[in-house]
Length: 601
Image 1 (tube, one colour):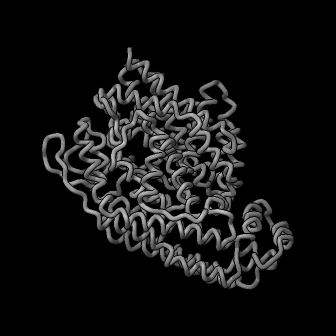
Image 2 (tube, rainbow, N blue to C red):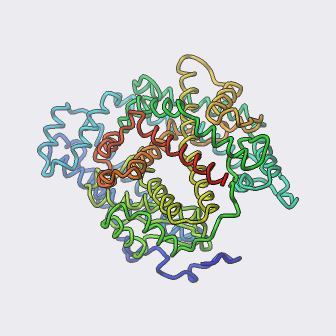
Image 3 (cartoon, helix red, strand yellow):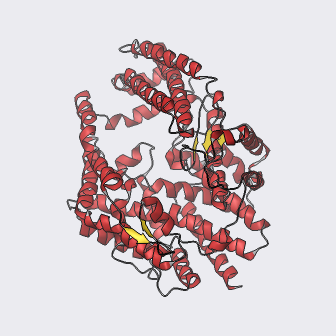
């Protein structure tokens, strides 16, 4: 499909490249019927209140809650997917809002379940679970309920904590309104001398410019409003950290980090191992900065010079059909069953391929336990689009295998492992393309793209995680945060990670002030753990250990049947050790060496 000046209409796209949403509901009328069914199930659920001390009543209650959850999810997904196909369509916006409200009502109707169960002893809960008609459906749920008991407070305290949410979400709300609504970016001159007002999207595009002056102007201009509002931004992030500390103390955790990791039962050692092992060997990243400086033929490299492609002229077109062929060839090592299902996904309209008027931007994968995953693309014939497609299909296959293998209460995998399947697919595609390519410049382009992806997905996220730990620990030990302190920490960490080859400027060291993920406590490190796990698996496979593939497919089929750390161990990946991180660092360093070798030839 060639790029046209006008955005295509839905009617211009062949059906084979559109979602088949009738797999969820054959019509809007069928959607309305299930909407009424959920309302009926809500009333059935309320009748179980006060009766959960009997095993049969508890089992029936959980079964109805699961059935309600599945239907409510399909209601929301069907409406939202239709909305994403054309955001100008008010009908599906209304249906999305109705489905979201219904889901809230369903959650409220069953809100009595956990508080009522926590009044029972551990022995009583285990005895009841052992009497269920099927004992392997809710066993993990019951054990997890017991494990979390020590951090559940009295009903009165829990009610106050619930009410406090309206107040404690203020830092995030303030930052979002400032960042998305109030901040106005200045204008700069583009490569042709035209005045262009900066936006977040235009800033990202300007950083990819081959003109160093444009990159510098974009960076300086973009950070001007953040510098002007630095005290406000410092206060909002400081308040967010204090909120984290309030909740960790209220739930009797030793630290904010312990509170954040508890949901997935992740040992503190995993977080510290990720940071410490990465920081023990940053030579590969330092070398890449120096290589960038050399290839860009610059005396100094600044943070805003770390994104622009080193070989922009090598970006080549890859139409969708060719991308599918390349991905299918790349994942052959994952076996016939995996490839057959992936081919079915491509052939059975799981994917909405092309951009059309009003369609949502970007790309995502969204599983559905009752049918199959759906993948949104805005495919535009680029290499990046091909890798994005491989990435999202990795997510889709992870969701599909978990949904088909696990009972509903165990189907949902943790964010901690969510990026393993997607980034492994990208790694396999890179290896496939490098092996088949006979053009040195194409290989350099592909290596550059993958190395930059590793910098963004792994190194940057680990650095962000260290920054989060530093600012939380500062307050936990009785200190206070200020804009000067956070800027100083950010400057120190940036120099540590990127080395002396990177020249820092007064604007780019303010980056901490504009990162929304810092308002989601200890969230970003999970990007790095997933990436490290996938790189460890890929490294073993490339070294000739084909046994890892079967274990990897077992991981994709495990859903949330155990804690993510334990699931990864079954795949011989122990995130509590330095192994996966060291494998990632070595693979990265080898790719930098290969890029240096090819660029000298």
